[in-house]
Length: 226
Image (cartoon, rainbow, N blue to C red):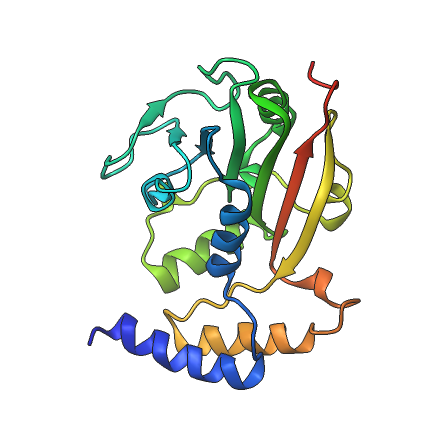
């Protein structure tokens, strides 16, 4: 058994005692995806990076990954393009997923305009993003504890990653769901313990807004495209 597998079993055992019946961050995200990624309409995974969710959900609906850079391994339909100018027909998509994308955009309104354009009325946008964290601190933590290179840590602009901003839907959308979740990363056990304590301390609904990640679902309102 690998170290990662050992850490996962260890973390799940502790989390089950402290936070019973709670999903981990990526489990919550995938559960939300399963609720909006449904046939027959295709969907877009914007800023997909190297994680291939389109293959994982292929049985449910046809998905297309899109990013400004090529993923390390391309095994699904992929388009290399600017997220603010999607090479996609208007009113052609049933869902759009934005996983840790909005907080890295200096002008997120451009992405929302494109999402509104390509979605059919009633189509949904699933957002997962990290909360406010100074880029220098974020860079130090990721480089130190996860071995990432300085170049791989994207800048953060804090345009769309506060609870107040998330609760104000962009033009043409309504907020359908919002949930605050702690990032229980088990790659370093002492970090997991700190994050688990944070999750436990913020179990009260009033305190949950202080958790490190936000998941939200928006629905495209009919008659408000463009």
